[in-house]
Length: 430
View 1: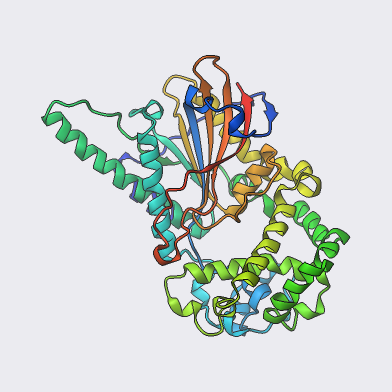
View 2: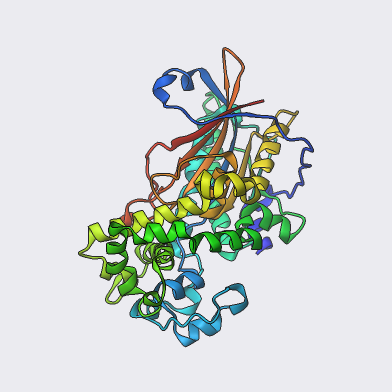
């Protein structure tokens, strides 16, 4: 797969190892305030560095989500590695929704997912074109990605999209030379920079798979806190109408805390159905079919899944304060090192990381974001960690810009939204 990625980059893809700075920047933090408090501040800033963290595109359900949400066939169960899951003897028999999925579709990036990342690559290239001070034609942009196959394929697609805009610009520049017009700065080429070991890769992109964190989360998901939420009248009504029907009979053997936890897996499988290119995945027996005339019930289920994600990643009392730096600190530290390196001669002012939704949530936890985004992170969702310097004072602020659902139109599921990303966090840095 490494050679495939390098081929996508073409001759310009030179593998260059950039030394990582030894020291971390010292920061003072402050939660992002309402822009009304500083109506002209962004206009007074100049963007001096940006790092993009993007989730992979649409895929089939993970094997774990499939059997927890809708069960699994004997063939599906045999195909997964039981040692990867604590509940390897889970008794879930296949529902009709599970039978819709072929084994080779599980976990795999779809054609829609690939197209989404092509679109993301194009959009990011245009974003860089709008900030010419970030462009240095003699400096390559570092790209790193998770080791999971669907992310490797997503990174390839992102590079493809970026390269399309880069080649268009090169053609325009050649035409401009012929008519003696001003030539805009050239988009730098991307280059893939591998980590020295698989574990180093996991520490950056999937630290949330660690044993200690998962043990703590398992305890929390079976705690009195979860049970109390599950027993609330409104929650119980939704669980009875969704989880207890779709995930029967195994859900009926769980207490309310266990049933509440299943909402995140149902949300995942539902999203995989909605974005899958084959409409049969949304046909008879699917979760999409179950919720077809139950929009309010679907909304209620998603709200419970949203609550659960917040408890597991963002909420400062349940997880963020204790685990934020442990699950997102390696990525945050590397981005800060990227920024420090950008100050040197020839240092790139851009870096790119292609990973998972949990990669972005973990970064938010490491930063100290106190509130989960309004929407659950969708396929191709992204965050930009921008460093902005005030032109008058010289003060540098680190701002996290978030686009949780960049592909909201299910009828045109690879067309990127023009919605302006939301600023969810900022802090003063050096």
